[in-house]
Structure formats: structure tokens, C-alpha cells
Amino acid sequence: MSEGVEWAMHSCLNLSWAEPGEAVTARRLAAFYDLPPAYLNKQLQALARAGILSSVSGPRGGFRLNRAPEQISLLDIVVAIEGPEDAFRCEQLLRKGPGGSDDVDYRAHCVISQEMRAAELEWRRALAGRTLADVRATVETRFPHTPEATRDRFVNAPT
Amino acid sequence: MSEGVEWAMHSCLNLSWAEPGEAVTARRLAAFYDLPPAYLNKQLQALARAGILSSVSGPRGGFRLNRAPEQISLLDIVVAIEGPEDAFRCEQLLRKGPGGSDDVDYRAHCVISQEMRAAELEWRRALAGRTLADVRATVETRFPHTPEATRDRFVNAPT
DNA sequence: TTATCTTGGACATGTAATATCCAGAATATG
DNA sequence: CATATTCTGGATATTACATGTCCAAGATAA
Ligand code: SF4
Ligand code: SF4
Image (cartoon, rainbow over all chains, first blue to last red):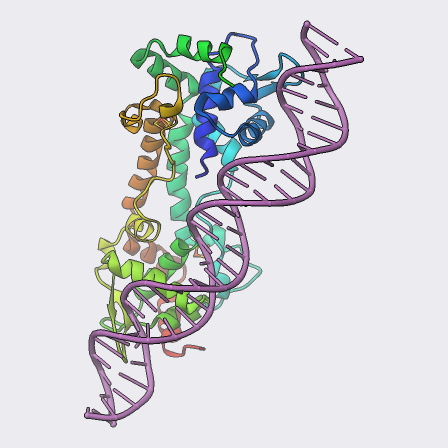
């Protein structure tokens, strides 16, 4: 899994603590963890294309959450960055095996493929059941100062 | 996930149909799906190191299953090839965040990390619950000629 | 009008997966 | 014993992809 998923998770979480209606620059989000701004910007664009963030050009522009944190599942974020493909790659080996044919889609019949897909489905189900709001609530319970500290950092950006 | 997982799954499955006590050459296993023999050999070595296969040097040597198919879970195979690391990489971003410290292991505290780990645990649980014997039984039900065809291919190797 | 900021493409870099090769060790067979 | 076979493991090459940078164009607040 690409590192961008972790960046996206943290950026979305931080955005959920921004002042309502305020957009945050890619530069400021990157400065938060000393990440490469241009590259993080690409991840934010992907989140925007997925409808998780909305973007605003120009001065006072930046990114903000496009939905309520209750409506953003962790799976949404993962899929926005990683794409919808399964991690297990079925290259349809059976086509080259005995009695294999190019005309058959073995992904539909192959038992191995089905088992691997079933397992990934469990993974997706777990991620789909947790939202950004869940994560935010847990963090706020454990570290009550985090929302204020995050907003502070948005205002007094070091870079 | 690396392609070797798929190769390993198929090779273990094919080995489960070999004559009992008979070892199968890496070359023959590779010829099955026209895979690069030297590279597949590396995957088979990994399976052997993991105790899933046993290897025999010399003439009439090769690989065979080291345990009954009922004792080989799909997770065993995946871990043997991919390693035990989680797919989600926690780079401990919080260390560079506000109030971060190099002395703290944030993987233990971070909510994001915990959620991602919980999801992967579901994935592992699903894979650990299915064995090579399950897969083999399903294949034999759907395609009864497969065991015989596989043994045939072991004997009359094209390459 | 100007400075800011996103967009998206082009491009450079780095790293890991993929693939090949070879010398050495093990071993069945004659 | 001699030989052919096969695994072992390290070195190396190749390729694919993730990572990172840069720039020109468009949008917009002030
Ligand atoms: S058996 Fe399954 S995993 Fe293997 S090639 Fe066929 S569809 Fe793919
Ligand atoms: S919040 Fe979690 S995922 Fe992010 S850096 Fe900390 S431990 Fe890692």
C-alpha cells in the first residue's frame, strides 16, 4: 500500500478540525508533517476527484472536506488513493495451463481467486464500517488538545 | 501483492495432486504455466524455508508438500512469499507533527494505525480459515478431471 | 491588476519486484 | 567412484512503479 494513504488519512483528519468553511492550502497541510508539498498536492487532487475534498483556486483557496466526517469512510480514502483494484493480482495463469483457453475468464471460476477476493472483501468491510468521525472522536477523547493544536498550526504555518 | 503469491498458490495446489512421496522439479512446476524457472525456484525456496514445502537435492529431487493440505492455510502461503509485514505502512508521521517526539512509538497510540491494523486482521483471519485442502476439494468437485490431468502434466513435461 | 493557489502534464529519481546467471553442495544412479 | 541432476544462495541485470520535482495555464480573492 502506498505511503500516500497515510498522508491522506492524516490530511483529512486535520481538515476535519479546520474552521468551518475555511480552506487549507496544500502547502500548509504538507508543512504539518514536513511532506513534499507538490507530491502531497497530487494526493489531495485524487481525494478531490473522488469527491472527498473540494478544492478552491486562488488566494484564500485550498482544500476542505466535501462531506461531513460521518459520511467519509476509511475505505473511501483508501480507494481514492490506491484505486479500486484488488491487491491480489490474478493473471489468469490457468490460460497457459492444461486445457486452458483464452476465451474463458478464469477469474469467475478459479477457486483461488475467489478465496483471495473473499478475504479482501472482509478487509473492505472493516474499513467501510469506520468513518473519519469515528477516528476523530477517538483522538479527541485521548488527546483533547489536538483540535486546538491543529487549528493553531494551520494559522501559524512554519513555511 | 506480488505475483509470486499466485504462483505459489498454484504450485502448492498442483503439488497436492502429485503422487505421494514423489518430488517435483522446479522446472516442471514452471513449465506448467510457462513461468521463468529460476524465479519460480526462488519462490519455492521461500515456501521451503517457511516449512510449507520440503526440498530434495539431486536426481529424482525437487519439491513436495511438507504437511497435509489440511494443515496449510492460504495465509501461510501468503506470509511465506510476502513476509509478515502489514500492507499499511505507518511511518509515524506524528513524530514530525505538533508536539511529536522521537521517543514515543506512535504505532501503539495512533488511532489511524489501529483501525488499519484491525482491518488487516480481518483479512488475515479470513485467509487463515481456509486451507489448501478446502481449495483442492472445491476444484475437484467442479473439475473432476483436474487431478489426473495434473499428474499427466507432471510426467509428460513439455520442457 | 496582482499575487495566490489549484490543475494537470511532463519529467527525473529512487526503490522494489522481476528475472537471469553461476558456482557450490547434495544425492540418486550406474 | 564418476556422473548427471537438482536445489541453494549470492550477485547482478532489467523492468515497473512509487516517489518527487517542475512548469505553464487557469481560477479567484483582494
Ligand atoms: S486459478 Fe485463480 S488465481 Fe490462478 S490464474 Fe486462475 S483465476 Fe487466476
Ligand atoms: S497517526 Fe497512526 S498512521 Fe499516522 S503516523 Fe501516527 S501511528 Fe502512523
